[in-house]
Amino acid sequence: MKVAVRVRPGARADAVGGCWDGPRGAALLVAVRARAVEGKANAAVVDLVATAFGLRRADVTIGSGHHGRDKILE
Image 1 (cartoon, rainbow, N blue to C red):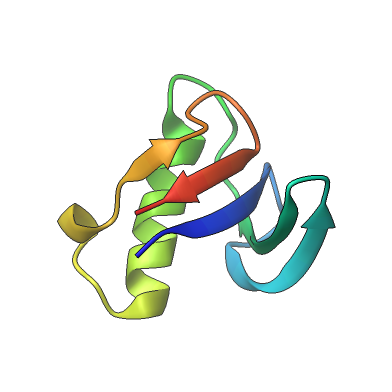
Image 2: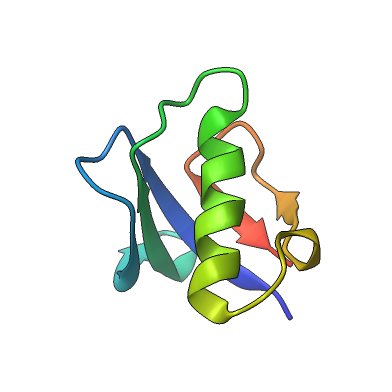
């Protein structure tokens, strides 16, 4: 399953929820406290989404968008 997400790094709190309507279509909003430095925000996104969906961390990967806010999670 593929899920489009829009990441907000450096947020006050970790949260999954909401919808963002961007130029590529709708995406799930994911806010993480981690900054976008050395992959810390990406790791936080994977951890948070896995927890929110009741999955193991190893079951969630970033398919595309490693260096941007818009990502496709698989």
